[in-house]
Image (cartoon, rainbow, N blue to C red; front, top):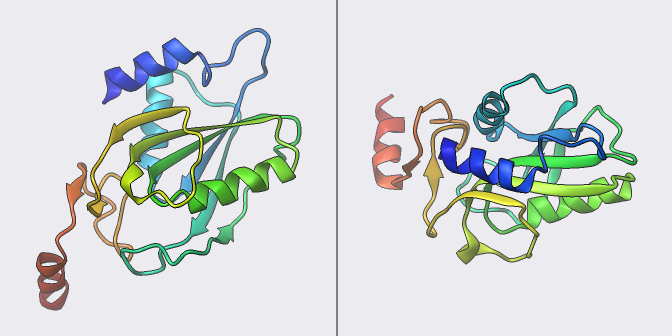
Length: 174
């Protein structure tokens, strides 16, 4: 993943910025995108001057999107006139990113790019333009490396497929 993402960034030149554009505002979607954001910053090989976070919720404690997006913690930086690069863990239905993209443009962002670690296009309800995708995955619920179910398994150092029967047994036992 790291070398593919690094090549994509070099090829596109969109996250690192250039002489014409100012440093982009990196916007990490909490909590899931934090490991991806940290890895991306390491790949860029430097600190990020413009970085913010936003926490949105559309799943609650379940494994299926509820169809509405709630802002739990808003970003602090003003996106007006800025290039905003959204860093997301997974794109599923597209509702969350469509909501966030519209919100950023409504607040005056000059442009919005979306970098996602995982893309699950088979579940898409709302199309959103993705600038870069780490991996396309089938319609399975995944967890680890920031992804969770009801706040659990987020700290796994890998991404795995969630099997409800196994997880239910572990939750009852633990």
